[in-house]
Structure formats: structure tokens, C-alpha cells
Image (tube, rainbow, N blue to C red):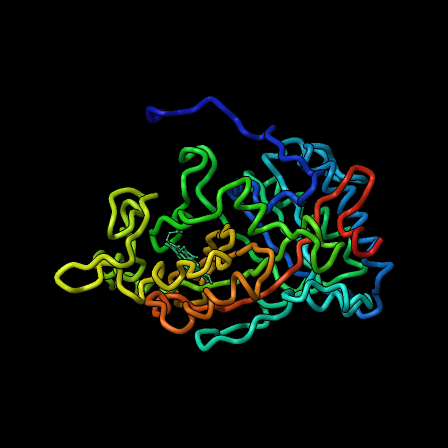
Length: 368
Ligand code: HEM
């Protein structure tokens, strides 16, 4: 068999990401190739005690699985041997706080988003009491971890929705290269840098809700791409609708992906980056309007007669949804050129509790 030039002998199956720490892993962790987001509801007869059981079970098994050890009572321990940067991240939906009698502990911006005119939301992709988010470079390991974690809690929960997403396979491009989405665009260029920017914009400091210090909030939007009509747009039209070049990801006023866009630049009296280009509308207008984007592509089996059902599992992490995310989403809903080729079909919001200390469990700061 002929093998192309740049074959790499390296394997990544043994790579791990620490489970314990001040913050849950899976938020500012470099994104793995695969992700699964599962929203669950507590069963009607379940309350705070059952929630604590769920969180203890998930913590014990997540700590083992992320280290490449089988879960407790694992029936397929062989499938746990290659953690491949597995992360397990848990979130609390707005409804959970009411369900367990702790409404006053809900971080105020963790509530359903207002509806936007562009929304075509489907209940099958929206809401949820609990979020279980897994990230992994290997889909086998991910499938096993997911089954173990979900089957353990099935007497106390029902699954509301499952969304699976992917990025470029690990080893296909340089680690750290910005991903492309299924419209062809380089997606994720402008993001807060690790360190001071992430600390300032993403991690809660506990000023409002002391239990939430070290946590963050997540907005998850399932956004369908209308690829059949996007296909009809030529390269120039595509570049204008984003404000960046499809080939390099560079802003229309620059040469390289990471050049600063010049939103005021004009040519023959016309703004080079149109005012309704996606990045012109999305770019922050105050320092506070920034957040961490960590999107995944989805490409699910299409309905009969359709060619594809594809889009973005768009995730944004920030301290405060009202201050940081909402003004940007509002501007996009009003006049983003991209709206013609994208349709939000799902929406959910979660508080991501702080990290776990050894011997503790996820969410104990709230329910312990
Ligand atoms: C930038 C695609 C939805 C916020 C970008 C870029 C692309 C892109 C290609 C330029 C490269 C980059 O900096 O990442 C998309 C697609 C979407 C989508 C295909 C839907 C399917 C959203 C949503 C929001 C958002 C819902 C927030 C409400 C941003 C922000 C930037 C950005 C803040 C950086 C703007 C800047 O300062 O230059 N997006 N996006 N995007 N997008 Fe989106």
C-alpha cells in the first residue's frame, strides 16, 4: 500500500487533561476533535438528594475515565484505556435551580435568552436542567464514557437532547491552528487569550454568588447552515458577508489571519468591510462585550430528499451573559449579512460550576 509523505508515527491516545482544578476542564481546554453535549432533565420525583447522587457518580467516574482508568463497575474497561484528552464538563440549566429549591443561588444572567427574530428554535434542541459535555480526540473513548456516565443516572434523569460535533481530526493540522467550519471559513480567530484575558472575561469571581467563584456561563446555540444557498454565492460575496477572506481567514483590510481588521477603511468611498458583515456586527463595541467561542461543526443524517443537515454547535463562555454575549447577539439578529445563510434552531443556557478538588464533587459549592 502506498502511503503519502508526511505520515506521523505519533499517537495521542495516552494524552490526558487534568480533571481536578480551580475550573472545570473543557472550557478553556484546547478543543478536542470530538464533542458531545447532552441535556438532561431531572425526573419529576427527583430533587436535591438525587442531584447530589448524580454529581457524585459523575465525579467519581469522570475522574477515572479522564485519567485513562475504567469507571467503577465498568463493563468494557478496555474502552477506557486511551483517554485521548477526554474532558467531562457539567452544567446547571436555569430550571435546575428552581427544581432543587435554590432559585436565589442562580447566577442572574443564567436564564433563557430573549427570543430573536432570526430564531426558528425547536424544543428538541433547546433547554435542559443539566448539561453533560464531553470532549475527546477519539470517538470510541467518547462513546464509551458517554454511555457509562448516562446509564448510571438513568433512574433519576431523562435525556432531553444530544448534539454531537467535530473539528479537524487531531494530527491532520498543526495543534493550535484555527478550525474551519462547514461553510469553509476559518472560525475562531478572534478569541480571548489564555491567562489574564480569559480570567477577566470567562471565570466568575464570586462577587454576586460566592458559590460560583471559578465557574462560568455557557450559551449553546445550534445554528443550521443553509449550505445549498451558500453554494450559490461566489467567493467575493462570501468574503463580504463575513468580512474576511475564505482562503486565508484574513480580514478584507489585511493580509494574514491575525491582522487587525480596519472597520473604517474605505475604497472608492465604500467601506471595505461592509457594515453588515458578520465581523463588523460581532466585533465588540465596549471592552465588556467579549467572550470565549469554542464552536463545533455538526453534520447529521439529512431528512429524506435533503443532501445535508449541517451547521455549528456555537458555544460562548463568559462571566455574564447579559453584559457580554447579549449585546452582540442582538446586533447580529438585527442586521448580520450571515443571517441569510444561518438559522438558529436550538438554544440553551447553563451555569458551569467551578472546578473540583480531590475528595470533592462537581457542584458541591452549591448543593453541599
Ligand atoms: C467571528 C462564523 C455565529 C460571534 C466569526 C468569524 C467567522 C464566524 C467565520 C471570523 C473569524 C473569527 O474571528 O472567528 C460564524 C458562523 C456562525 C456564527 C458560521 C453561525 C453559524 C456567531 C454568533 C455569535 C458570533 C451566534 C455571537 C452571538 C462572533 C464574534 C466574532 C465572530 C464575537 C469575532 C468578531 C471580531 O471581533 O472580529 N464568526 N459565526 N458568531 N463571530 Fe461568528
